[in-house]
Image 1: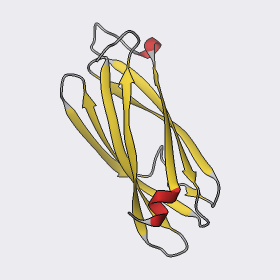
Image 2: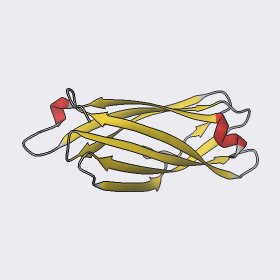
Image 3: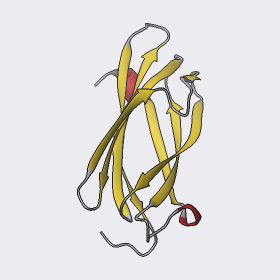
Length: 127
């Protein structure tokens, strides 16, 4: 694994958005707040994202795109970048995982940072 990839960590805080969800319409809305920490001694830029969303009934969706929330943020050494986004599922539980492609601004080398699987679940769901 790339030493820069090991120096970037990702924390995720998912939240069920009951007021935006509708069980009748099979619409379950989740927000997730991500904090990307740069523990290295060099600045990095987050260029793109990849998400794999697996819903409780087995449907898999893959999402790729430039940046996050319309930005390609630079994260300086020792700092973090935080943002909130959302996912809409057809069932009350699911799992998201993925990666960010970043570039080391010192060496111009790109690398991927893995995002460990995290659970999306409306209250009172056992899965």
